[in-house]
Length: 146
Ligand SMILES: CC(C)(COP(=O)(O)OP(=O)(O)OC[C@H]1O[C@@H](n2cnc3c(N)ncnc32)[C@H](O)[C@@H]1OP(=O)(O)O)[C@@H](O)C(=O)NCCC(=O)NCCS
Image (cartoon, rainbow, N blue to C red; front, side, top):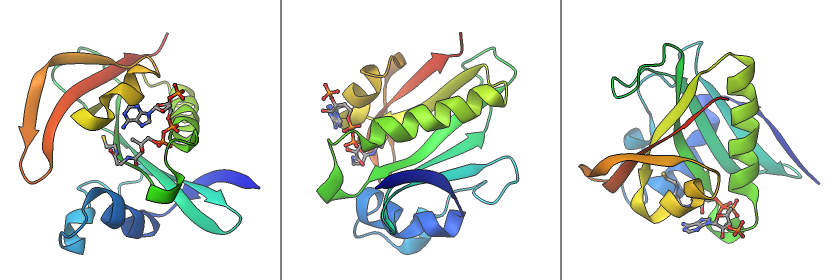
């Protein structure tokens, strides 16, 4: 049995570390704004095991004109459970929550290796690829609420 529920910022740290910051200091897994009241973190559980995470920040990117913008960060599924539809379920759950908060646009910096995952969910690339130091090449991607 699986379920998705809101979790704390600190609960995201082990999966962020394994999947997104392997071999890097655990401090690199804490993001600015993690503890803000406007931020929320979701966990995908199978029984009691947390196997997928996504974090959502209310954060404006000057590339977009919309007033109410949300950024996705820290999207990760445990290596043994990838490509089973879990990431897609987490993004869909986050999108529903963002629409309830009247978000007009969702954006994020996507690793090039994950950009196809987001394209399949109708996210679009804006501009050229760029380097995030210590993490790698990224695309700015977005989807507007309709
Ligand atoms: C990227 C990630 C979050 C996707 O989650 P997931 O649970 O593996 O993805 P899903 O099973 O929901 O995939 C949905 C679709 O996207 C595809 N997909 C998933 N990851 C992909 C990838 N890296 N490249 C291309 N396609 C991908 C799946 O094959 C599936 O396609 P289908 O519907 O045609 O079968 C996960 O694989 C992961 O944690 N990767 C490592 C960390 C990472 O890159 N995070 C994102 C940082 S921006």
